[in-house]
Length: 515
Image 1 (cartoon, rainbow, N blue to C red):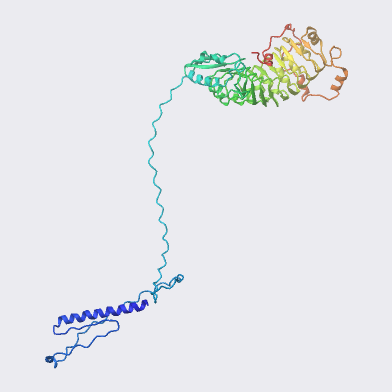
Image 2 (image 1 turned 45 degrees about the horizontal axis):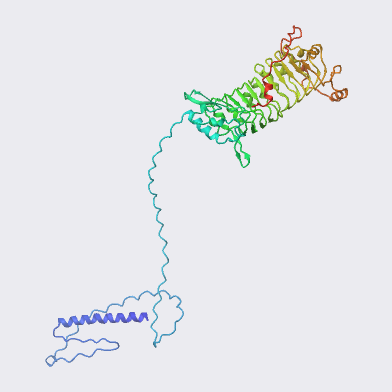
């Protein structure tokens, strides 16, 4: 149907052009008669009328040539194949249906979405707020005051928390007037500062909470007093561990935390406090081994007694410059290190009593020519007394009780000029010479409960026989006879013994402080 319509349109266009040409010729030839063209569906045109008589003899002029009809336009491109028709609709009431219209062309494929616009650039940063004014510089006293006030809140206000009510004096802005504190001019700031804490015997404790008393820690207090020179706080209820920043206290010389409730491994934090000259950690619950660096601290006093330290005493013992060493009432095991002889110029008193030490006494102990007190009682030590002990010229108190020593008591030891107390009870010695018997009569030598059969108060024969039935020896038996000093007292006039030894400092450490 579409092809027929195109053909009819071409014919009509050709006729229209012909009509225009003929009309043009009629206008130019005034003598020509007009032609009437009747165009219709299936009609024809009629013959022209006869010419007038005056022109009958003249033939009619030939018609002008007409331009050839235009070539029909090329057929339009065939439409795409129709898509399947929709289901037929019911017939319309008209007798003949209209020609179906061509199906619509398939929609073109969707074009890809346009690219997303770039994110909007962030707004320019707002100008920074103005810097706050610098904090006021605190004086050294003000720094200490803040720390003390914070610590005060941790102390119980009941009679068990502060028995002497010292915190009632911690009022105002001058901690130099507070009870338990000492002030001095700090060198690098050249201003007054809090230099010392003395809570010895104050029995401070934490607050009550839920029916239980809270812990009273050292952290946040001792380590936050930057100008501290000494901290004496024995016989209190401090618990936990020693704070790590203690090592940063640049003027710190003395630390006494004995008789508290501190626990854990050995407090290595004190090893970095290079200026310490006094370290007292006794009567706490520290455990484990003692680090060798402890003996490199430049201390005059090292009190480690009455804790739960174990393992062997480090060989670095001889490197300690301390005058007073107490290892008593722990669980140290193994032998006494030979290196102890290296402390010959510094060591005055040493206590090893009530541990689990074993083995023979090293002859190097005889080098301690400045020592006045040596106590290894209540251990598992054995062997004879080294003859090197004859060189202990200043020895006043020598205590070897409650071990497994045996053999003959050296006469040279009984001739020591300053010896006032030689205690050998509860061992297995078998003989004493004349010089030693003189000391027994004077009460300077105690040999009770040994195997000296001609003396009273000795072990039974069966008990002594049982002990000697087992082979016993020291690793280097010959060293037991070695005397390192050039002078001993066998051929010299022996000075008179003192009536009683001076009260040693170290024995006082075996009792907790009495508040």
